[in-house]
Image (cartoon, rainbow over all chains, first blue to last red; front, side, top):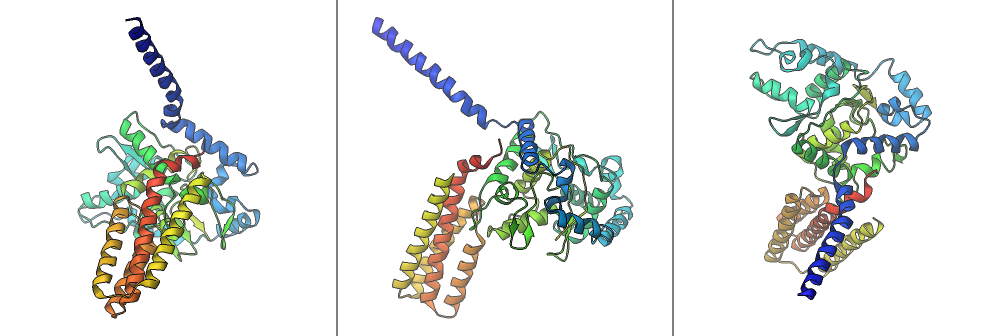
Length: 286
Length: 107
Protein backbone atom coordinates (compact mmCIF):
# COMPACT_ATOMS: atom_id res chain seq x y z
CA UNK A 1 0.00 0.00 0.00
CA UNK A 2 2.74 2.41 1.04
CA UNK A 3 4.72 1.58 -2.08
CA UNK A 4 1.63 2.23 -4.17
CA UNK A 5 1.27 5.68 -2.56
CA UNK A 6 4.96 6.36 -3.22
CA UNK A 7 4.53 5.29 -6.82
CA UNK A 8 1.50 7.55 -7.33
CA UNK A 9 3.27 10.48 -5.63
CA UNK A 10 6.35 9.99 -7.78
CA UNK A 11 4.22 9.79 -10.92
CA UNK A 12 2.38 12.98 -9.95
CA UNK A 13 5.64 14.77 -9.19
CA UNK A 14 7.08 13.70 -12.54
CA UNK A 15 3.95 14.82 -14.35
CA UNK A 16 4.08 18.20 -12.59
CA UNK A 17 7.76 18.53 -13.46
CA UNK A 18 7.11 17.66 -17.07
CA UNK A 19 4.27 20.19 -17.21
CA UNK A 20 6.31 23.03 -15.70
CA UNK A 21 9.32 22.27 -17.89
CA UNK A 22 7.14 22.15 -21.02
CA UNK A 23 5.27 25.37 -20.32
CA UNK A 24 8.05 27.75 -21.42
CA UNK A 25 8.44 25.81 -24.68
CA UNK A 26 4.71 26.06 -25.34
CA UNK A 27 4.80 29.73 -24.40
CA UNK A 28 7.69 30.30 -26.80
CA UNK A 29 5.67 28.85 -29.69
CA UNK A 30 2.39 30.58 -28.80
CA UNK A 31 1.79 33.49 -31.19
CA UNK A 32 2.15 36.94 -29.66
CA UNK A 33 1.74 39.44 -32.52
CA UNK A 34 2.29 42.53 -30.35
CA UNK A 35 5.60 41.16 -29.03
CA UNK A 36 6.61 40.10 -32.56
CA UNK A 37 5.96 43.59 -33.93
CA UNK A 38 7.97 45.15 -31.11
CA UNK A 39 10.89 42.76 -31.70
CA UNK A 40 10.67 43.34 -35.46
CA UNK A 41 10.92 47.12 -35.10
CA UNK A 42 13.72 46.81 -32.55
CA UNK A 43 15.72 44.48 -34.80
CA UNK A 44 15.66 46.85 -37.78
CA UNK A 45 16.10 50.09 -35.89
CA UNK A 46 19.10 48.63 -34.06
CA UNK A 47 20.57 47.16 -37.25
CA UNK A 48 20.23 50.53 -39.02
CA UNK A 49 20.48 53.15 -36.25
CA UNK A 50 20.99 56.00 -38.75
CA UNK A 51 17.75 55.28 -40.63
CA UNK A 52 14.71 57.18 -39.42
CA UNK A 53 11.98 54.59 -38.68
CA UNK A 54 9.56 56.23 -41.15
CA UNK A 55 12.23 56.02 -43.88
CA UNK A 56 12.24 52.20 -43.91
CA UNK A 57 9.20 52.37 -46.20
CA UNK A 58 11.55 53.59 -48.94
CA UNK A 59 13.14 50.15 -49.12
CA UNK A 60 16.59 50.03 -50.72
CA UNK A 61 16.67 53.83 -50.88
CA UNK A 62 16.69 53.98 -47.10
CA UNK A 63 19.80 51.79 -46.98
CA UNK A 64 22.17 53.88 -49.05
CA UNK A 65 22.71 57.68 -49.20
CA UNK A 66 23.56 57.80 -52.91
CA UNK A 67 20.50 55.77 -53.78
CA UNK A 68 18.39 57.98 -51.53
CA UNK A 69 19.50 61.04 -53.52
CA UNK A 70 18.67 59.26 -56.78
CA UNK A 71 15.24 58.45 -55.42
CA UNK A 72 14.60 62.06 -54.42
CA UNK A 73 15.42 63.13 -57.96
CA UNK A 74 13.30 60.36 -59.43
CA UNK A 75 10.33 61.54 -57.35
CA UNK A 76 10.37 64.83 -59.32
CA UNK A 77 9.04 62.87 -62.34
CA UNK A 78 7.92 59.59 -60.83
CA UNK A 79 7.66 56.64 -63.23
CA UNK A 80 4.40 55.48 -61.59
CA UNK A 81 2.61 58.69 -62.55
CA UNK A 82 0.91 57.26 -65.65
CA UNK A 83 -0.41 54.33 -63.65
CA UNK A 84 -1.61 56.65 -60.90
CA UNK A 85 -3.55 58.78 -63.40
CA UNK A 86 -5.04 55.67 -64.98
CA UNK A 87 -6.10 54.36 -61.56
CA UNK A 88 -7.73 57.66 -60.65
CA UNK A 89 -9.73 57.64 -63.87
CA UNK A 90 -10.71 53.98 -63.52
CA UNK A 91 -11.79 54.53 -59.93
CA UNK A 92 -14.09 57.37 -60.93
CA UNK A 93 -15.61 55.51 -63.91
CA UNK A 94 -18.89 53.74 -63.05
CA UNK A 95 -19.42 50.05 -63.87
CA UNK A 96 -22.03 49.10 -66.50
CA UNK A 97 -24.63 48.84 -63.74
CA UNK A 98 -24.01 52.44 -62.67
CA UNK A 99 -22.33 51.60 -59.39
CA UNK A 100 -18.61 52.19 -58.78
CA UNK A 101 -15.60 51.09 -56.73
CA UNK A 102 -16.43 53.76 -54.17
CA UNK A 103 -19.67 51.88 -53.34
CA UNK A 104 -17.69 48.80 -52.24
CA UNK A 105 -15.43 50.46 -49.65
CA UNK A 106 -15.64 52.41 -46.42
CA UNK A 107 -15.18 56.17 -46.86
CA UNK A 108 -15.85 55.72 -50.59
CA UNK A 109 -12.43 54.02 -50.86
CA UNK A 110 -10.46 57.19 -50.13
CA UNK A 111 -7.65 57.11 -47.53
CA UNK A 112 -8.24 53.51 -46.43
CA UNK A 113 -5.21 51.61 -47.78
CA UNK A 114 -3.63 51.51 -44.30
CA UNK A 115 -6.42 49.22 -43.06
CA UNK A 116 -5.73 46.47 -45.64
CA UNK A 117 -5.43 43.56 -45.39
CA UNK A 118 -8.01 42.88 -42.72
CA UNK A 119 -9.34 39.70 -41.19
CA UNK A 120 -12.95 39.10 -42.22
CA UNK A 121 -14.62 37.38 -39.28
CA UNK A 122 -17.63 36.33 -41.36
CA UNK A 123 -15.50 34.58 -43.94
CA UNK A 124 -12.79 33.54 -41.49
CA UNK A 125 -10.06 34.63 -43.94
CA UNK A 126 -7.75 37.54 -44.68
CA UNK A 127 -9.02 40.01 -47.29
CA UNK A 128 -6.42 42.05 -49.15
CA UNK A 129 -7.08 45.25 -51.08
CA UNK A 130 -6.42 43.49 -54.38
CA UNK A 131 -8.91 40.77 -53.50
CA UNK A 132 -11.51 43.32 -52.34
CA UNK A 133 -11.16 45.22 -55.63
CA UNK A 134 -11.76 42.12 -57.74
CA UNK A 135 -14.67 41.08 -55.53
CA UNK A 136 -16.11 44.54 -56.03
CA UNK A 137 -15.86 44.10 -59.78
CA UNK A 138 -17.41 40.63 -59.75
CA UNK A 139 -20.32 41.59 -57.51
CA UNK A 140 -21.05 44.38 -59.98
CA UNK A 141 -20.99 42.09 -62.99
CA UNK A 142 -17.50 42.95 -64.22
CA UNK A 143 -14.71 40.49 -65.03
CA UNK A 144 -11.86 40.37 -62.48
CA UNK A 145 -8.48 41.85 -63.37
CA UNK A 146 -5.14 40.05 -63.31
CA UNK A 147 -3.74 40.41 -59.80
CA UNK A 148 -0.20 41.16 -60.81
CA UNK A 149 -0.02 44.36 -62.91
CA UNK A 150 -1.67 46.90 -65.22
CA UNK A 151 -5.24 47.70 -64.10
CA UNK A 152 -4.87 46.19 -60.62
CA UNK A 153 -1.61 48.06 -60.08
CA UNK A 154 -3.26 51.29 -61.29
CA UNK A 155 -6.25 50.95 -58.95
CA UNK A 156 -4.14 50.08 -55.90
CA UNK A 157 -1.72 52.89 -56.82
CA UNK A 158 -4.53 55.42 -56.67
CA UNK A 159 -5.93 54.03 -53.42
CA UNK A 160 -2.46 54.05 -51.85
CA UNK A 161 -1.89 57.60 -53.03
CA UNK A 162 -5.03 58.81 -51.27
CA UNK A 163 -3.68 57.20 -48.07
CA UNK A 164 -0.11 58.51 -48.18
CA UNK A 165 1.27 59.35 -44.77
CA UNK A 166 -1.37 57.35 -42.88
CA UNK A 167 0.24 54.75 -40.63
CA UNK A 168 -0.44 51.07 -41.23
CA UNK A 169 -3.20 50.09 -38.80
CA UNK A 170 -3.71 46.35 -39.19
CA UNK A 171 -5.87 44.73 -36.54
CA UNK A 172 -5.93 41.15 -35.32
CA UNK A 173 -9.41 40.58 -33.90
CA UNK A 174 -9.98 38.36 -30.91
CA UNK A 175 -10.68 35.34 -33.08
CA UNK A 176 -8.45 32.23 -33.05
CA UNK A 177 -8.76 32.02 -36.85
CA UNK A 178 -7.21 35.49 -37.17
CA UNK A 179 -4.31 34.44 -35.00
CA UNK A 180 -3.91 31.28 -37.11
CA UNK A 181 -3.80 33.42 -40.27
CA UNK A 182 -1.18 35.67 -38.69
CA UNK A 183 0.91 32.69 -37.63
CA UNK A 184 0.52 31.05 -41.04
CA UNK A 185 1.87 34.25 -42.63
CA UNK A 186 4.73 34.37 -40.18
CA UNK A 187 5.60 30.73 -40.91
CA UNK A 188 5.55 31.43 -44.65
CA UNK A 189 7.87 34.41 -44.18
CA UNK A 190 10.54 32.43 -42.34
CA UNK A 191 10.22 29.10 -44.22
CA UNK A 192 13.01 28.25 -46.65
CA UNK A 193 11.85 27.13 -50.07
CA UNK A 194 12.99 26.73 -53.65
CA UNK A 195 16.20 25.13 -54.87
CA UNK A 196 18.18 28.09 -53.51
CA UNK A 197 16.86 27.23 -50.03
CA UNK A 198 15.91 30.84 -49.26
CA UNK A 199 13.13 32.19 -47.10
CA UNK A 200 11.73 35.72 -47.41
CA UNK A 201 13.77 36.46 -44.28
CA UNK A 202 17.02 35.29 -45.87
CA UNK A 203 17.05 38.42 -48.03
CA UNK A 204 14.87 40.85 -46.14
CA UNK A 205 15.94 40.16 -42.53
CA UNK A 206 19.42 38.70 -42.78
CA UNK A 207 20.70 40.81 -45.69
CA UNK A 208 18.86 44.13 -46.19
CA UNK A 209 21.23 46.76 -47.56
CA UNK A 210 23.42 44.04 -49.11
CA UNK A 211 23.52 43.47 -52.83
CA UNK A 212 22.20 40.53 -54.80
CA UNK A 213 23.92 41.17 -58.10
CA UNK A 214 23.04 44.81 -58.86
CA UNK A 215 20.04 45.00 -56.51
CA UNK A 216 20.15 46.42 -52.98
CA UNK A 217 17.88 44.31 -50.80
CA UNK A 218 15.04 46.06 -48.99
CA UNK A 219 14.38 45.60 -45.26
CA UNK A 220 11.25 43.60 -44.37
CA UNK A 221 10.19 46.36 -41.98
CA UNK A 222 7.88 48.58 -44.05
CA UNK A 223 8.40 46.53 -47.21
CA UNK A 224 4.73 46.68 -48.28
CA UNK A 225 4.08 50.34 -47.46
CA UNK A 226 5.21 51.55 -50.89
CA UNK A 227 3.20 49.01 -52.90
CA UNK A 228 2.33 48.93 -55.71
CA UNK A 229 5.66 49.84 -57.29
CA UNK A 230 7.12 50.74 -60.63
CA UNK A 231 10.19 48.56 -61.11
CA UNK A 232 12.73 49.35 -63.76
CA UNK A 233 13.52 45.62 -63.83
CA UNK A 234 9.88 44.93 -64.78
CA UNK A 235 9.63 47.97 -67.07
CA UNK A 236 6.29 48.56 -65.47
CA UNK A 237 4.11 48.47 -62.40
CA UNK A 238 3.62 45.50 -60.11
CA UNK A 239 1.36 44.69 -57.20
CA UNK A 240 2.06 42.87 -53.95
CA UNK A 241 0.95 39.67 -55.72
CA UNK A 242 3.56 40.28 -58.40
CA UNK A 243 6.25 40.86 -55.79
CA UNK A 244 5.47 37.63 -53.91
CA UNK A 245 5.26 35.43 -57.01
CA UNK A 246 8.45 36.81 -58.58
CA UNK A 247 10.34 36.44 -55.28
CA UNK A 248 9.35 32.77 -55.30
CA UNK A 249 10.45 32.28 -58.92
CA UNK A 250 13.79 33.97 -58.23
CA UNK A 251 14.64 31.39 -55.58
CA UNK A 252 13.50 28.62 -57.96
CA UNK A 253 10.28 27.82 -56.13
CA UNK A 254 7.10 27.33 -58.14
CA UNK A 255 4.97 30.33 -57.16
CA UNK A 256 1.50 29.80 -55.74
CA UNK A 257 -1.48 31.45 -57.40
CA UNK A 258 -1.87 35.15 -56.61
CA UNK A 259 -4.16 35.61 -53.61
CA UNK A 260 -3.80 32.00 -52.47
CA UNK A 261 -4.31 31.80 -48.73
CA UNK A 262 -0.57 31.64 -47.95
CA UNK A 263 0.10 34.91 -49.78
CA UNK A 264 -2.85 36.64 -48.15
CA UNK A 265 -1.65 35.51 -44.73
CA UNK A 266 1.91 36.59 -45.55
CA UNK A 267 0.62 40.05 -46.45
CA UNK A 268 -1.34 40.15 -43.19
CA UNK A 269 1.77 39.26 -41.16
CA UNK A 270 4.11 41.67 -42.95
CA UNK A 271 1.62 44.52 -42.75
CA UNK A 272 0.92 43.92 -39.06
CA UNK A 273 4.60 43.98 -38.07
CA UNK A 274 4.94 47.28 -39.96
CA UNK A 275 2.06 48.89 -38.08
CA UNK A 276 2.77 52.55 -37.40
CA UNK A 277 4.87 53.10 -40.53
CA UNK A 278 3.28 55.43 -43.10
CA UNK A 279 1.81 54.34 -46.41
CA UNK A 280 4.10 55.69 -49.14
CA UNK A 281 2.71 53.98 -52.24
CA UNK A 282 2.82 54.01 -55.11
CA UNK A 283 6.58 53.65 -55.13
CA UNK A 284 9.46 53.23 -57.54
CA UNK A 285 12.27 50.71 -57.29
CA UNK A 286 15.32 49.94 -59.44
CA UNK B 1 20.30 25.95 -37.97
CA UNK B 2 23.70 25.28 -39.58
CA UNK B 3 23.12 21.54 -39.04
CA UNK B 4 19.86 21.79 -40.96
CA UNK B 5 21.57 23.51 -43.85
CA UNK B 6 24.35 20.88 -43.83
CA UNK B 7 21.77 18.07 -43.76
CA UNK B 8 19.88 19.71 -46.60
CA UNK B 9 23.03 20.20 -48.69
CA UNK B 10 24.11 16.60 -48.02
CA UNK B 11 20.69 15.24 -49.00
CA UNK B 12 20.64 17.33 -52.18
CA UNK B 13 24.23 16.35 -53.08
CA UNK B 14 23.52 12.65 -52.46
CA UNK B 15 20.38 12.77 -54.54
CA UNK B 16 22.17 14.52 -57.40
CA UNK B 17 25.08 12.03 -57.19
CA UNK B 18 22.74 9.06 -57.34
CA UNK B 19 20.88 10.65 -60.23
CA UNK B 20 24.15 11.31 -62.04
CA UNK B 21 25.55 7.83 -61.44
CA UNK B 22 22.29 6.21 -62.53
CA UNK B 23 22.20 8.30 -65.68
CA UNK B 24 25.73 7.21 -66.63
CA UNK B 25 24.79 3.55 -66.23
CA UNK B 26 21.45 3.87 -68.00
CA UNK B 27 21.04 2.21 -71.36
CA UNK B 28 17.57 3.41 -71.91
CA UNK B 29 14.49 1.91 -73.42
CA UNK B 30 11.12 3.60 -73.70
CA UNK B 31 9.81 1.44 -70.85
CA UNK B 32 12.71 2.50 -68.61
CA UNK B 33 11.98 6.12 -69.43
CA UNK B 34 8.29 5.72 -68.62
CA UNK B 35 9.10 4.16 -65.24
CA UNK B 36 11.66 6.86 -64.40
CA UNK B 37 9.33 9.64 -65.52
CA UNK B 38 6.41 8.25 -63.53
CA UNK B 39 8.58 8.08 -60.39
CA UNK B 40 9.69 11.69 -60.90
CA UNK B 41 6.14 12.88 -61.50
CA UNK B 42 4.92 11.10 -58.37
CA UNK B 43 7.62 12.73 -56.24
CA UNK B 44 6.85 16.15 -57.74
CA UNK B 45 3.16 15.62 -57.03
CA UNK B 46 4.02 14.89 -53.40
CA UNK B 47 6.05 18.13 -53.29
CA UNK B 48 3.00 19.89 -54.72
CA UNK B 49 0.84 18.57 -51.92
CA UNK B 50 3.37 20.13 -49.54
CA UNK B 51 3.09 23.42 -51.53
CA UNK B 52 6.80 23.28 -52.24
CA UNK B 53 7.59 22.44 -55.85
CA UNK B 54 10.79 23.70 -57.44
CA UNK B 55 10.97 25.30 -60.87
CA UNK B 56 14.04 23.18 -61.63
CA UNK B 57 12.03 19.99 -61.14
CA UNK B 58 9.49 21.14 -63.72
CA UNK B 59 12.33 22.10 -66.08
CA UNK B 60 13.93 18.64 -65.76
CA UNK B 61 10.57 16.94 -66.34
CA UNK B 62 10.03 19.05 -69.46
CA UNK B 63 13.56 18.22 -70.68
CA UNK B 64 12.88 14.50 -70.11
CA UNK B 65 9.70 14.64 -72.16
CA UNK B 66 11.41 16.57 -74.96
CA UNK B 67 14.26 14.05 -75.13
CA UNK B 68 11.82 11.12 -75.14
CA UNK B 69 9.81 12.74 -77.94
CA UNK B 70 13.04 12.96 -79.93
CA UNK B 71 13.72 9.27 -79.25
CA UNK B 72 16.74 9.93 -77.01
CA UNK B 73 15.79 7.69 -74.10
CA UNK B 74 19.20 7.78 -72.40
CA UNK B 75 18.88 11.51 -72.03
CA UNK B 76 15.19 11.26 -71.15
CA UNK B 77 15.95 8.81 -68.34
CA UNK B 78 18.81 10.98 -67.04
CA UNK B 79 16.53 14.03 -66.92
CA UNK B 80 13.77 12.03 -65.23
CA UNK B 81 16.20 10.82 -62.56
CA UNK B 82 17.37 14.38 -62.03
CA UNK B 83 13.77 15.56 -61.71
CA UNK B 84 13.07 12.83 -59.16
CA UNK B 85 16.16 13.77 -57.14
CA UNK B 86 15.15 17.45 -57.15
CA UNK B 87 11.57 16.63 -56.17
CA UNK B 88 12.80 14.46 -53.30
CA UNK B 89 15.07 17.26 -52.11
CA UNK B 90 12.11 19.66 -52.15
CA UNK B 91 10.08 17.18 -50.08
CA UNK B 92 12.96 16.93 -47.60
CA UNK B 93 13.12 20.72 -47.44
CA UNK B 94 9.38 21.12 -46.82
CA UNK B 95 9.44 18.44 -44.14
CA UNK B 96 12.45 19.78 -42.25
CA UNK B 97 11.19 23.37 -42.49
CA UNK B 98 8.03 22.47 -40.59
CA UNK B 99 10.08 23.09 -37.44
CA UNK B 100 13.32 24.65 -38.73
CA UNK B 101 11.70 27.98 -39.73
CA UNK B 102 11.44 28.93 -36.06
CA UNK B 103 15.22 29.27 -35.83
CA UNK B 104 15.12 32.26 -38.20
CA UNK B 105 12.44 34.15 -36.30
CA UNK B 106 13.26 37.59 -34.86
CA UNK B 107 12.73 37.37 -31.11
